[in-house]
Amino acid sequence: MDSSSRISRIRSRELERLRGPPWLKTVQRVLLNCTYTTLDYAQTGLIAAVFFFKMMEWWYQSAEERMSAPTVYPPPPPPPLPKVAKDGLPLPTDRTLCPLCCQKRNNPSVLSVSGFVFCYSCIFKSVSQVDILLNQPLEAVIFYAFRICNVTLSIVLLQHKRCPVTLMPATVEQIRRLFHDL
Image 1 (cartoon, rainbow, N blue to C red):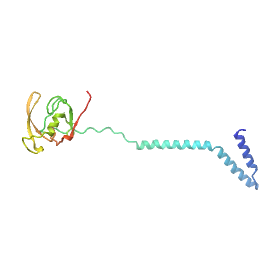
Image 2 (image 1 turned 90 degrees about the horizontal axis):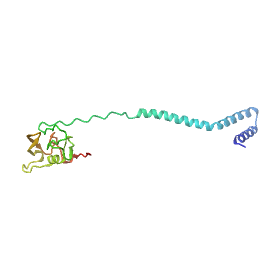
Image 3 (image 1 turned 180 degrees about the vertical axis):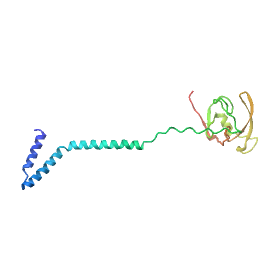
Image 4 (image 1 turned 120 degrees about the horizontal axis):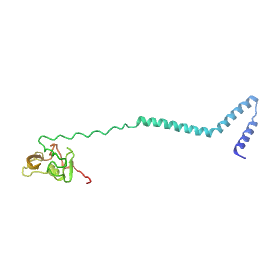
């Protein structure tokens, strides 16, 4: 015997057991039939309700994501390079040369206060060197150096504890070595 015939037999027995005046039997019969119908379609209704609520959740979630999605802006342009100081070292025309020794950069390093790239040994000496002969504070140490660049000799004024190009105050801790694959 299958379950649907068994359920219909149980329901018909319950309907026969109804007692009372005819109007009360009618009300009880209507209520029982409503209960049976509700129970028959409960599984289908539950599946439809879950589907409906999931669809509504998806609908409003996607709208919320569109509203709260971060706007993608283009990357900002890089800040302008500091200007070369009037009394600072001039930059060589070839960007692969060190402004201090005018040779191809060996062990390139950037001075973070200015953004200019030098040889590590050149910038380290320039920023940290102390002229013992002058016996003055580091900010005031100035010396003259001969520099051969593009076959011309020029006298360059260097100030220690500063970037040689921009003359901005600098320390050894602000030197960053650059690593790259050849």
